[in-house]
Image (tube, rainbow, N blue to C red; front, side, top):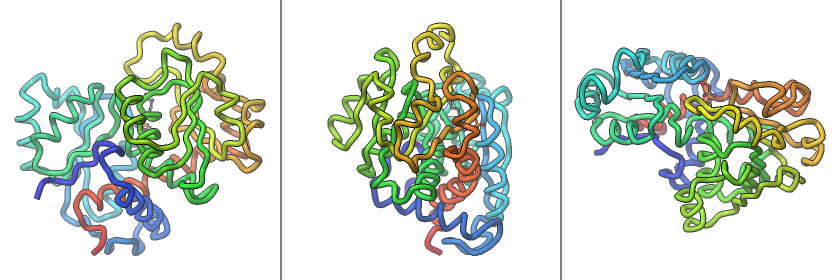
Length: 309
Ligand code: CP
Ligand code: NVA
């Protein structure tokens, strides 16, 4: 059987996505060691090999602890050490690491590197963030929305700012689960033509405009992310383009009364969001950060096919 990679949300059908989300909720209910949808210590003896070519706090810590809580262990490998695709071929790296570990996680700049690694790995590969997408974040985000405002299928989600890697995974999720997603970005930072074409082909309820107020009007969930992602070099241009896309109290007031604010973190107060919003009563960003742990325990169990034990 081919390994069950977790590379992108668009690779999952709606039933698998729903199952992952239910597992994430169950993992949280189960707590650190309690029973969840898997038997305790379901990953005993398993090793996660984590290659980080970019900085990380949440992804690294939550995957490491998640493995420990499921009875397995995780090994951190710095990008400088492994030099994926530079010291030797990606294929050789994939084949060797598959002999050592049970799951490989990669955070890298180029999405193509991730796909190449997955193509040659005989164990599951997890996308720990690329320039293209951040699917682990989105499972935690969907979980957070469900906790705060109810079933994701009925949510009205507004994304304000750069249509970046996190936004791409939100678009994948919206199309697969059929919920309403309104993107507001400056024209030059809107979805890549390939992604726009995919959205049109697949259907769904995703709209794209340059108008943050129209996007947020009546939304039950408002999301922002950094204006400058890791690897972006056009900092000044972005600051200028994205100035009108700051989520402040006035913009948040256009959302539904019970709306929540999400941000994957790290956040830059005063740029994409004001301190009043991210530190205010509607913000669920620390639940969101916590949920990385629960959601990724579900992803780990799913990758190894132990979820229904
Ligand atoms: N949100 C997120 O992925 O955080 P890190 O970059 O700290 O892992
Ligand atoms: N869009 C951000 C997300 C960080 C978790 C980046 O890629 O830097």
